[in-house]
Image 1: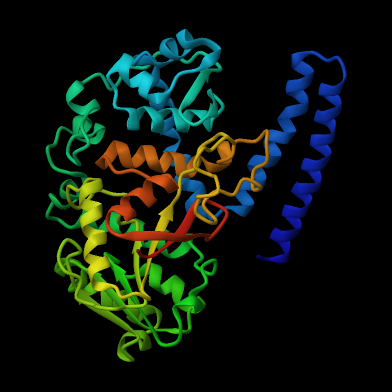
Image 2 (image 1 turned 90 degrees about the vertical axis):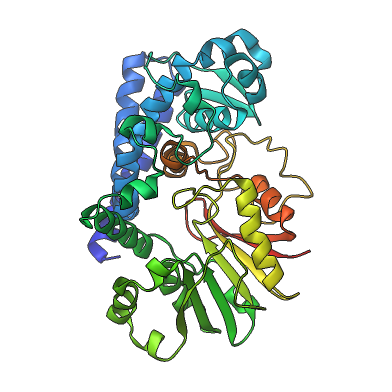
Length: 420
C-alpha cells in the first residue's frame, strides 16, 4: 500500500469518526428525520469511500455487478408470498420449513433467499430459520415455474429458463466453438483467482517437512501459485484436472510466465485425473479442494456426488493426511447460532468479529458472499454452505472436522478435516 493511499485511508477514518460523533449527537437529542438523514449521509459516504480504497478491485467490481441479485431476490420473495406468510406468523416468527409448507418452495432455497435479504436489513433473523418482516418490498415478476423452483439439477435453473437452453452453464459456455466465450470466461476466472486470496492464514507447517499436496480439480493451479510463498515445506504439488484442462497450452504458459522453475524442478506437477474416480496419489499429506464442492457447473452433482468425491480422497489418504476445503463458509445472521456450542468446529463461528447488535455474518459487509450463494443457485444450482452443512457432507465420506482457518476479511476459509 502506497503512502498516498495509506494517508487517504487514515483521513477517511478520521472523517468517519467525526461523522459518527455528529450522528450520535443527532440521535441523542430530539431531531427530525431530515436532521438524522443529514447526519447519516456523510457516514454512508465515508464507508463507501473507505470500501473503494481497501477492497481488491476485483472484489469491489464483483459486488457491484452482483447487486442485481438483491432486487431479484426481493421480487422472488414477494411474488411467492413470503412477506404475507411471515407477517401472518406474528412475533413468534416462522421457520423456513414453515414457509416451504405454505409456498411450495424447497426449504433450502427459502433459507438462502431470506438470508441474503436479512443481510440487507429487509428481514430480521432472530434465531436460525425464524424471520419477521421488517419492511414491505415491491412486487417483481419471477420464479413461478414449478419445474424450475423445485429443481436442483444444473440445467434446471433461472439461467436455463432465461437463456432458453437445456445445457448446464459450463456446457453452454463451451457450446460456441469460436473460443471467444470460453476464453473470456477463463480469463476472468484466472485474473480473479490470482488476485483475490491470501493463503497465509492456514498453518501449512502442520503438514510436516517435504509434504505432498494434491490440488484436486485445480484447473491451471492459481490457488497453488498463491499458496507456495506461505508453504516452503510443501515440496511437491500435484495439480489435477480433466485432460482437456491439464493438456491445454494455457496451463504450462501460466506457470512458465510466472516461474518456470516450478515445473522444471518438479515441485509443481500436472496430472490428468477425474475426481469421480479413484485418486491416483496415495497417502499425500494434504488433499486440497477449492471451489469444487460448491458448484455444479461442469457436471451434475448433488450432495451425494460431493460425498463420492470425498470418499475417493478418503480411500487414498492415510492416517496423517488432511483434507483442506477452501471456499466460503456462509454464516447465519443471528447470534443464537444453535450449532455454535461446545461441539462446534474451532474457528467456524467468529462471534467476536461482529458483536451484537451487528449481524453475526457481517450483514452488508458479507454481501459478496451472500450474493455469490444466490449467483450459484441462479446459474447452476450450486451453493455456498454453512459450516455444519459442509461438516455433514464430509462426515458422510468419513472425514472429521478439525479446524476452520480464516484467510482474509471475507468468509473465504480453509476447513481442515482428518480421517475418522
